[in-house]
Length: 417
Image (cartoon, rainbow, N blue to C red; front, top):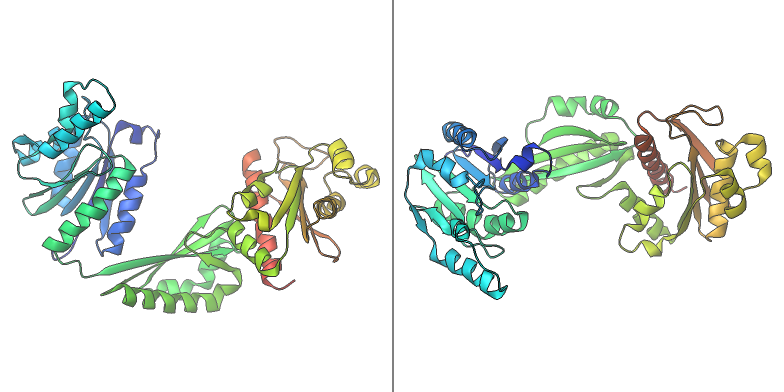
């Protein structure tokens, strides 16, 4: 192929109903990019033969590598092969290896096999067969009128094994995969998408290779860099140089790349200092500490946490002075600082953090929904707080408050305070 134009098609009504996410397409796109194959289209279709056939005809016209996942099972609504054969017009044959595997499966499990299971062993007469080590339906590759068609089961573990062991070796043997594409996601917190994009406007306007794409998510911003080169080493070199240029501009907000999360970064900073952390949570209901203890090795930095939701819980269980709660209220800077100090004391940690506020939907203590106080106490230093006002539903306010707390901790720990 002079230039790959690939398309990924997911088959299954469950995709259209939102019952499952099409994670297959995401994974395949990533793997194709690593091999220098551009993806032009993601499409999905339900279990309807006429609509599938129409989609396959469109794919034949506009793409030269079409990867289809799903619709290869034994039931009547598994229609991928029948629909695409309106294009191929090939006889089917039985793949004996797949047939034997299906029969052995039922024998080993002492189950009776219905005849429709043999449908999974049915392959196109001119197909290159890919052995499915994880399941029963084999993968198939069919070359038709200058197009390469790949058919894979929809089960992710089966699809991935067939891509790794079958599809890419086939493409490397038959075609030249000369361009390598590498991506890196730079992660920033404490700066909005529009502000970051404005600071990087010159680099974005002049981008060539790598390309630069800002992407916003809850409480943070990502910048995806994508570089192409004759080798992975060349692509890596291009990424490294662009990363350095970007960090010269917005490096104060950068906390890591790719799969790292802000809680993972805070965990690492605490571990570097040999510090521990504890939390007293009211409106967040334990979300902060749950994210921290979800990390492997969390016991090294996390000593404990308490959900003290009511005024009585803050006073009797956490030990906040009634003077504070009566004079200033439970939703106040003073209460937040006291909660952080008590968490630090009770759980014997270097860092104590707290959350109190109004998640909504109605006011509390005459404060509007979205009013949040985060208290922080580090070592012997005087405790401090941040007040923020957050928009969104009750759950969104809670999640945003936790993200804001990790942002505060990251900048505090990263700046050597």
